[in-house]
Each structure stands twice: as structure tokens, then as C-alpha cells.
Length: 301
Image (cartoon, rainbow, N blue to C red; front, side, top):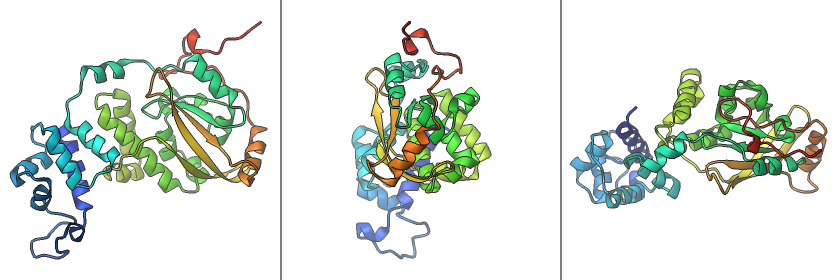
């Protein structure tokens, strides 16, 4: 799908979600044949001509100005993440974007050591595509041993969607899947030439009706923090908080850490889970080969 077509789909999806009565228009009308606002109504709210907005939705080759995009975003009542996504879809890619997409994904030794030092908390290093670059022992027993999977399968979204065990593990699987697909959708908008993202999305669209439904919703969300509920086969129910920490050198490579509330039943379950954990192995890069020496923790003796 072309960039203009993606932009048109996103605009139509968000326009359909606006209730006419929320902007002072009658909910029923002989002219209203679609859910949400009509194009003419949205164009009026944005202060642009109906013809211009129609061409924008139809994916014609036009380059809207920043002020027009701001006006459309306001009319559509987009949040800040959705607004950024709109700009990503509408603006041309830059040389900086192309350079960043060509860079390899390796885990620095300092990040790897920090991850492994969190022996009581599940921790993962993820790239912008949600590929799992490394995980510690607790991470493997909480979710799965990503290092044991084929390189092309070491993607968190892919695992959540296609692995049956993930549907059992997450007590709120639908919400988790929607969130992760939203993260992937946001990244795809920022990096449309990233072949790995194209590969993951293509496979999931071919194999999963759930993914096709979630992808068509055009939901976008940033990686941040929150709480997830698990039903773990070894230790039972747990409610864990998570934080996503950016790394200084590569802001698109993040450290994902799960923690439990001290003294809670979830913390007791985590302590029991730790008895099953084993130290992490040498981190693997996106191609599945051992990372360079600088990506390994230094060993003494």
C-alpha cells in the first residue's frame, strides 16, 4: 500500500469515529449514510475546502502543509501520538531516516550487563520493530526463550499474535495484542522503508485474522509504562508493572523491565519464578549471529 493510501485510510478511520452530536451536528440526517462525520463536515471543521480534503482522503499525490495537517488533526480530535502519526504518513522521508534504518541492531555491553544484573526482574532489550535483541533469565521464564527461536521469529508482536501459549499467559490478551500492534503500526508509519517491519507485518497479515482486524483499526500508541496481568503455568496469577527505558546511544533500542509490588502475592510469585531462571546467553543481533565482542559482557580471569 502506498503512503498516500495509508494516509487516506487513517483519515477515514478517524473521521468515522467522531460522533456528529459531539461537534454540534444532528445525529440523524437524510444525507448521513456513513458512521461519523461526512467529508464535507470534517473539511469545514478543519477550515479547508471539501475538494482538498477529499483528495487528501483519496490518496492523491498532494503534500499538505504543516498548518493544514494541524487543522485536520484538531478537527479529528487526535491525541499527540495520533497527531505525530498523521505527520509521519503525510511528510516525505528524510536522509536521516534512511540512514537510521540501515544501521544494525546490537546490544551494547553496558546495556547487556545492566539487563543481566536485574536477576530478580524480567528484562528485555527491544528494537523499534519489537524484535527481541536480548533477554535475561527471568525474561525467558516469564515469556519464552527468544534465543531458542529462529532469528526471524524473535519478535514480540509476532510471538503475542501467533504463539498459543501467549494467549494463555496474558489474562488480558486482547488488550495486550491491541497495544503491541499499535506500537508496530506507529513504527511502520515512521519508517516505511524498513524491510524488517514490512516482513513482520506481511507475515502476520497472511497468518492471523486477529492481526488483520487490529491492523485495520489504525490504532497507534507509544511504548511507555503500565501494568500487565499474567496467568503463568509455573506460579499462577501475577500482576506486574512495566517500564520502558530509552538507551542513550540508540533511542530506538529500549530496555523493558517488569517489577512486582513489594510484599504482594505477585512478588512472592516472582521470587518463586526466579528459582527457574538461568543466566542469559550471549546476545544475538537481528541476523541471528553472535554480536561483536563489544556487545558481550567482559569476563575476568
